[in-house]
Amino acid sequence: MSPGQFLAIDVSNTQIALGVYEGKTLRHHWRLQTDIGRTADEYGVLINSLLGNIGQPKIAGIAVASSVPPMTQVIEMLCREHLGVAPIVVGPGIRTGMPILYDKPQEVSADRIVNAIAAYERTRGTTIVVDLSTATIFDYISEKGEYVGGVIAPGLGIASDALFDRAAKLYRVELVKPKNVIGRNTVNAIQSGLIYGYVSMVDGLVTRIQKENRVKARVIATGSFAPLLAPESEVVDEVDEFLTLEGLRLIYERNAQT
Image 1 (tube, rainbow, N blue to C red):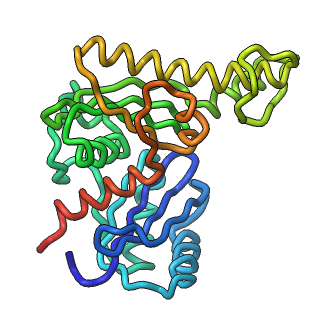
Image 2 (spheres, rainbow, N blue to C red):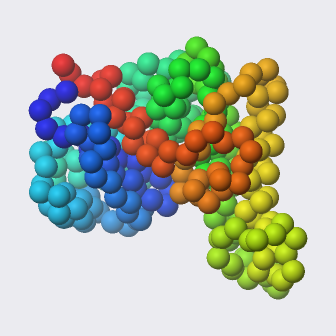
């Protein structure tokens, strides 16, 4: 890797996660709201302001994973024009080191591949990644390090919004764990259905994946809702909120010129 520091950018539907690495160490990280109405110039000013607060480090390399197609070009432009670096954008033609066994590999979003790479690098064995973000996504990686496939379900936030929007007598509640599964008021009842309902989905689907493949997998949770849901799970082995950023670092190392 060239002298300087590395910037990882993960663009999801709700947030943009950024991380500055020095070697293999994540030194600084931020989360911004994803706004497809913002221009490359606006994001450039914002990111340069964040970098300025930590001494304006020299960014020698950038890797980007984007699951929001309209944002991809915007992020590429800001990297080139405001940071002076041509980014590596995860997609077809990028060296990942992981075989993709999906029927149509191009349909697997970049963040899923990046998460799988980071998780397998850590476990070196059969792994299930549970990404608890805008969507709830389960990705299964074989013992040989192959991306096999996964499961996609609506995320906790989406479910909460849908319940509020579609049920006239129900209302939005704070997404926190209630004391009991049986709620004695409407707020607690909704919280129980959302929190414990999603935990049960995580446990049930992980169990089904392992049973179907006759394996015992290491289960790593990530995503914005992981700190809330994972502690209640009986199957999640660890939580890593920076899993995607770490995967981007690994992909950069596998593609950067030496």
